[in-house]
Length: 132
Image 1 (cartoon, one colour):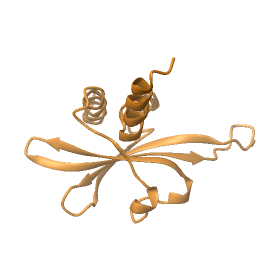
Image 2: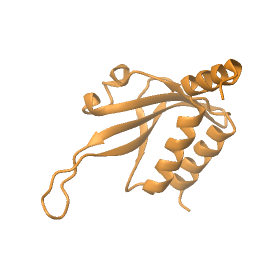
Image 3: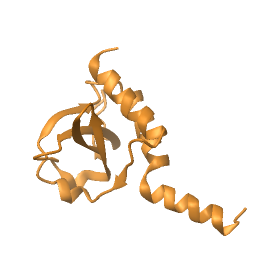
Image 4: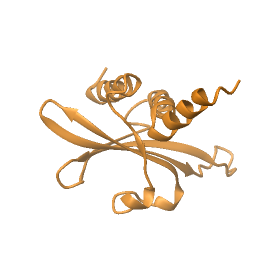
């Protein structure tokens, strides 16, 4: 397991334990670092502490249009995790498919889906409503 795998695993575990708390954000807010921000379907932001240093995390899901081996056009999704410097918002590094395994990005996406601020409010309201 290399350092990038360890980082994404740490972020996922801390998300599941709700140490890292994700908020839904507008991708346009980060258009200065996101190429083709109009293709971003969802974006999430969280604070991430490593030792005494603080960083910002930006997780995005975006539409992609890969061509398959037969030249057919299809649409899919790609995931990226940006680690940003807390002081100036500059990119420290980016984790995407190829740098880390796509399955790790999918697992992180699932954790964020279940533990972001809006989902949490929804499930609390659902539980309080006495529905089913």
